Amino acid sequence: MEYSRLRSIGPDAFQRQMAACLALLADATMSDEADIGRIERILDLKEGTLKGRVLHVQRQDCSGCQRQLTFFDVVHSAVVDAGHSKSFLVHTLLGSKYLVDKPRLVRCSACSVETPLPMWYVDSSGYGC
Image (cartoon, rainbow, N blue to C red):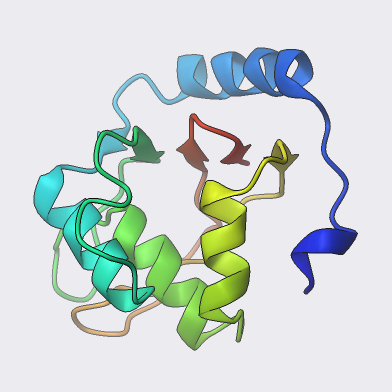
């Protein structure tokens, strides 16, 4: 995947779709500071680059280790399973485009068990599914 080839839907359309998505995810898991720090480290970002970001995932516990999955697991899966480059993921999170994708299977970063169903996730700054 190449970020420059992705098509943005625009901020208004993005906000409408993400509002509908978050309404369905009333009990979503929001990343805390520690989770955001882990995302920064896996993407080789300077500490604080993602500070203040609002990152949600569908609430789901890993069926292997029972750990609650987070946005870090989405990013980890994108690197490990989908083979996305760190540069692509950084552009997706910090770039100027508004992107909506489909839910994806997510692998637990602690025990490597994959979710049985695709998960929804949202970065309210411009990326979600």
